[in-house]
Structure formats: C-alpha cells, structure tokens
Image (cartoon, rainbow, N blue to C red; front, side, top):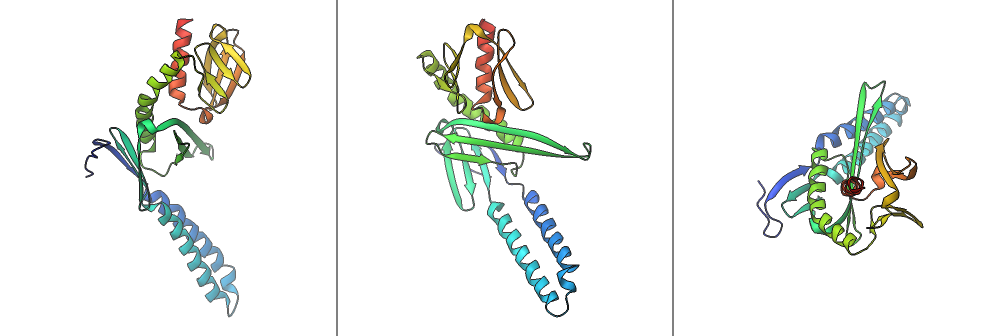
Length: 240
C-alpha cells in the first residue's frame, strides 16, 4: 500500500496499466506471424525452416519490447496531485499545474454490434505547455478520467471565474474564447443576448443562436475543460 506524500497528501486511487491488454494483442501477433511463416517460408527446403525460426524469434522480441515499454506505467491520484510513471521515471504534478483537460470517449461496434471496442483518451496540458496523454490501456480508465477531471476543475474553476470577472477572454479551444460579453471564435463574436443554447451530439459541441441556428461547432475532444464550459453556458442560459 502506498504511503501518503508530504506535499500531495493521501493516496486516493491507483491506476496501473492493464497488462492483459498488452499481452493478448502481442501474443496474437506473434502466433499469427509464426503461423503464416510456417505455411509459406518454412515449406522452402533447406534454409526455409531456420529462417522461419529466426524471423519468428525476432517478431517475439519486437512484440516483447513493445509490451515492456508500457509494462510499468501507472498513475496514482493523491488529494492534491498525481504521479505519472513511465518505466523507472516518475513525475509528480499538482492539480493546479494542469490548465486544460481534453477527453475523447467513443465506442465502436463491429459485426452488427456483436463486438464492441471502447476508445478512451485523456490529454492533459500543463501551464508550461507539456502534454500528458493517457490512453485506454489503464485499468478503470473511465473512473480515472472522471476523478482527474473533478480534481483539476476544482483548481481551474475559481481562476477562470476570476478572469471572467476581470473582463478577460478565457480560451476553451484553439479558437473558442468566452468572456463576460459573450462567445468569441476567431474574429467573430456572439453576445450573450444572442446566445440561445448548446447541443452535444455525434461527438460534437454546437453553440446555437437564439434563433436556433448553429453559430459554431467543434469536436468534443478539441474542447478544453468541456464540463466547466458547459456549466458556464448553462448559467448564462439560466440568466437570459
């Protein structure tokens, strides 16, 4: 059991990489290559069998190296921050060091829905413009994303509201900004008096005018701190 950190506080949860998700694809790839070589190259008299054995061994080594590259990855959440482990290197971040969190969550269905595959990815951007990408290889990655988002937005929200009160334009994507006057995208602006509603469908966020027309839309995965943005939009709509 991990001990509390003197700076980051008690351990909230640990999220190691799901090693079975690493082993199964790697093993299947080695078996597939070995089987294909066994029925093709290995049939060549003389040098075929030893070359097949050598290529299969190289394939196994390459697959093993790829698995070991992710084997020890782990994220540990503390009360005031989190650690991100890559191999032997462990980096600690305070939640206040993260200025943006972007999420991508999709479910793909194959063979008429008989087989489903979930794709989940978090992208954290620090105040120093470092990018931390958390893929779906971690155990309970959905719970990890929710907890991380809650902790990070707890730190971000007061600062964002303070900036809005000072009249600043706060970014929520590469081009979208929000201010006390309204929404801004590039050189365009939508005053709050003309803002009607927002819609999330098909993996996109759409901002609508009072007439129901789409003013701007973008993929949800391209939105910074989408939960905070939607909360602010709801507040503006409620006050209209």
